[in-house]
Length: 424
Image (cartoon, rainbow, N blue to C red; front, side, top):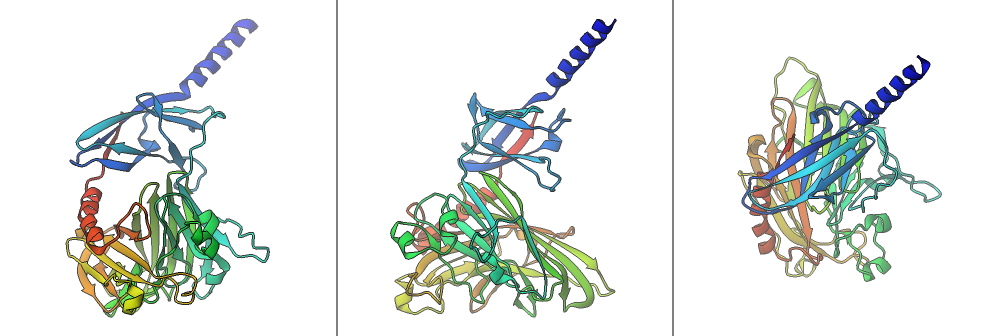
């Protein structure tokens, strides 16, 4: 009897172990006529039938070949919520991937070569710049210079961005000659020696302008910084070799339109490997609302690069730009990227753009420094847009305003035709 019971336990344990592995098919369909490269594919693990265990190892294959991927914890509970990978796909085509989930850890898995870099670091007396996942401060505190690189930083193998940790929350740009990860070495402060070796550099001086797709309040018909807030913060939501998501947030924001109303604002920025553009998701939430009903408006757009520069500084790149009600704002120009270091860093010619879906646009504006969209979130307080840029210094890029502006129609159309993902 004891032998039989032991046998039954062993059989049940074996069946349980076998049941802790499932394989599914994932169809990725490109309905657009054009081919797509490094197209993002997201599989929510909650959509995978039968995945009732914690997946400690995953394999993704296409026609028997391994596909690089990453598992992302989106809510901070230390468990994966999404499977993410990139794919090249032809126009009007469907690719079927095989995904295997297992409860058993695979210690022999081959690491994926990083094509993404993310950093949120502190300044310290030992210059070790410790990495942290989150920084918060009272709205009245000024810790701009206590954050190394002055804010959270993300980089793909094409471009780099940083978002300032202050009331401006401007988005700064890092342009590169070569497609590779550089910010672990230059950290936005490229030395003369690194410049001679072909490294990239900060390419934008935003000053009081909107920068490249920075999100601002809209008051009295002009962009306004986030000055009157109870708390501001930045955090790394998730990062891996192929995708990074970071959050910038302001809690207890006051608005002059209604003295007894406060709101919270969360900005999520997603950058993919192989991409120069960055997705932006905004979530606006009222926390205290008075009797007065208001239409809360915000704004974003691109600045006029080089509009205040002289002809010598512009190096033949005349400031040009536009904002259209169909959802594209673009600019091109040349100026110094740091007005305090003109001897170290030469003027940089760049192009910038923002794509804003038409359903959010309430108006378009042009002022002395910017091309702007005035926008309103949807009924749930959500808003989604994309921003992008190019640097003339890129070996594989755009080098004139004509080239840059011509590329933006294709960019808009590609964004409006994302792939469809079906788990079966």
